[in-house]
Image 1 (spheres, rainbow, N blue to C red):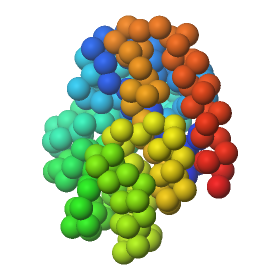
Image 2: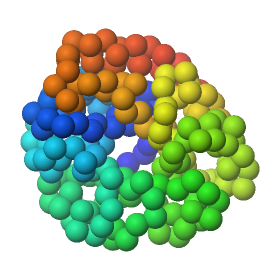
Image 3: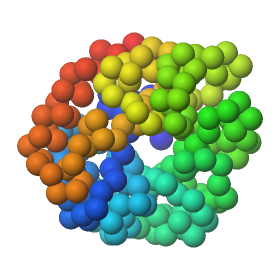
Image 4: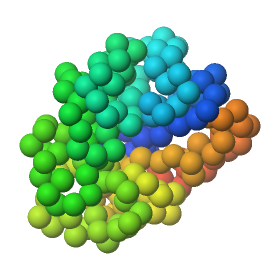
Length: 203
């Protein structure tokens, strides 16, 4: 799994109160070319969403589970068909699956690396912004960072310019789609996101 090769270097974060709507959101994003999604385990019936999305998208789809807090969460997500796991912080989630481990401070970045993180999920990224990412990259130039939290199209481009391998985006892209909102509006947001990020992602 190479995060630098994600379409628009974007991981879509799906979190919602309606399992059918959350599933439709993942599938619609894939149709619109944003083929890497994380389904938060705080989503209604999240494991069902992951399982059904995996059936529809096939074994090669980049479909992960987010807000993974325990080893039991990790095991259930893997069984449902997740191909990677995302944690909000340093957790005990031993699994054969690649991990994107949440961290914010230098000490946490070191610990995430010690635990074999595929990438460090810089969270909540909005507390420091692209300037903080640049500062972190000075002592950690080889660490792949994926900023999450308050990321919109403008800040996403700035994070990529600051050296992020990719970005994670939730509500600015998803809107209310995973709660049963308008999928046509989701398609429009996805198109705008692709237009805004295609050039930045290619740098």
